[in-house]
Image (tube, rainbow over all chains, first blue to last red; front, side, top):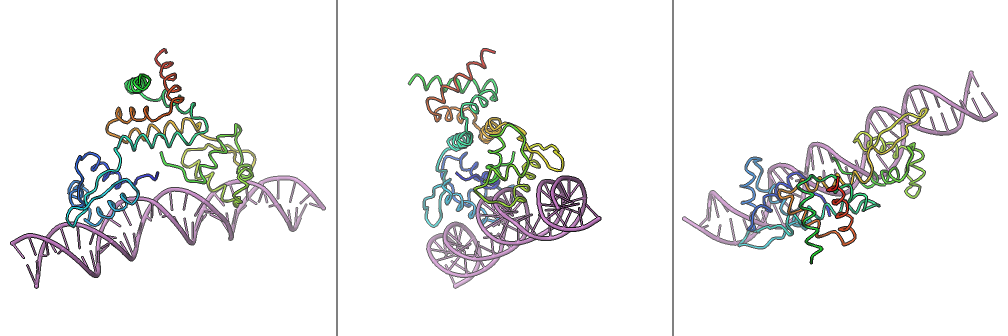
Length: 118
Length: 118
DNA sequence: GGGTAGTACTACGTCCCGTAGAGAGGTGAG
DNA sequence: CTCACCTCTCTACGGGACGTAGTACTACCC
C-alpha cells in the first residue's frame, strides 16, 4: 500500500468523517482554510481514487467520492504492514504491547478476549 | 519519524542483523548482489545517521555505523505512529486485534498479561 | 447564448531517494 | 620519498511522488 501525502490525508480525513459521498466542490468548501483552487482538489481526489483509497460514482456531471475502506481498516493495515517489516514479529508485537498506554492495553486485551470467545 | 527508502531499508536490515558496528566497506560487501559504488553506500549510511537511524563512531579514518534503535523498536514506533493517525484509537486497536492471526494474538495476549502483573 | 460548474489533461516546482563522481587527505609498499 | 589506494566529504543528477494549478472542452441554467 502506498502512503498518503499531507493534502491527501486532509482530504481523506474529511471523507472519512463524512458519511455521505461528496463531490469535489463540497470537499473543497470543507478545506476552506487552505484556499485551494478547485482543480487542485479535483486532482487530488482523482489521484486518491487511482490509488484505490476512494471510489467514485456519477452524480449528474459530477463525481461523488467516498472512502474505499474505513479509517480504522486503513490504520490497522498500516500497523500490519509495519509488523511485516520485521523478521521477528513476536518481539515487535511484545514491544508494541509494552508501548501502548494503560487504557489502550485494556482495549486490546478486551478485543483479544472477545476474539477468544468466538 | 521519516520513512525509509528501499536501499536504506536493505542497509538497515544488514546492520540490524549484525551485532557489531560495521564500516561502509563492510556493509558494501554484504550487499554484493546490487553492485553499488562504494560512495553510494557511504552516502546512504550518512543520510541514515543524519536521520537518526544510525550512530557512528570513529575507527581510524573510517566510521563504524550501528543502529540507534532495534528493529523491533522501530517497528513498534511505526505501529504507534499509524495508530496516532486515527481519531478513534480504540476502534483501530480493536480492528488490529481482530486482524492479527491466532498465534500472534496469543503473543499479544501474553505480553499484555505480563504487563498487568507488573 | 453566456455565465457557471464540472471534467480531463498537462505542467511545474519541490523534496526524497538511488546512484555516483570529484576532490582532499591520510597510509602503507616499494 | 613517492605512488597507489582507502576513506571521507561535498556536490550532483535523474526519477517519482505530491502540492498546486492552468487550460480546454462540455453540459446545464436562466
